[in-house]
Image (cartoon, rainbow, N blue to C red):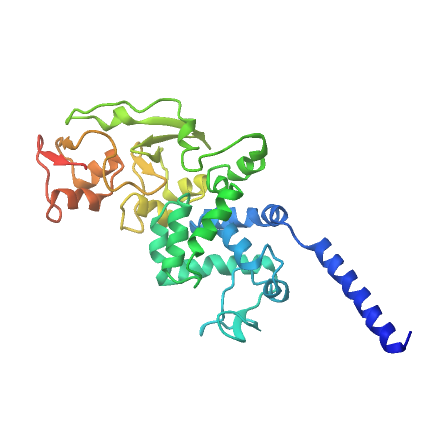
Length: 335
């Protein structure tokens, strides 16, 4: 055998060995999730970005940390340099040849930059109005805001979340729920939390309904009873409670809690005993009744808080003028 043939044969053997080694060290999806989900949950608590969305984007954009870009730059979210980036850079073929991507000293730094990127860019502001467990709206919103060019980007994220039950990470005590998922079959991600209800909602078609009759106790979490009305979860504020404190308990940012409760004042704090919604309210009442009979002192805001309906929706349904007073006994629409 000539030297050249031996060299070719040796090269082929080495190539096979390297491919086999590469296959052995390739990170699986399960390993990737286990490794980085604590970071995703921590960022959900601080920024309000669903942990399921963070994990799904990391899985998709980095191929579970196995892509060439992620291995050479620790960039797990495909974030490009843009004009304001002053950190390290790498160049990689993507939509165009030799595009500039951000490079990080660690994967953790990539996760942190991803959260700060979404939090600081105005084009993503509308996403933070969604509940942190509304992963489908977040997926659609990311695509609509131009995060990725793939036409089915939202569907890909949703598929990854549902195939791996990542929606469990968005719930209170999500890490424990996810860890125990193999021992419990969860087939309906949107209905799973509501299925924990200890009481069924009361049925009724009377116009003069009492929204308290529709209160459902879901469970207790970190010292709070979690209730549900109109399909929306909420807690009752305690003495000296703050949105910051409630946010820490439920992994929600104070900013999102104020948005969920239609409060524009950045310094507003809850009043003891009042409902604090921990996800976005509905646009209308989902029950049979169509009207509410106003009580003395009620406003569009207070009616919305009673029925888990957005203040703006109450105003639109009834064509209210700004700051219009509601007389006792007045009948207004709630759907």
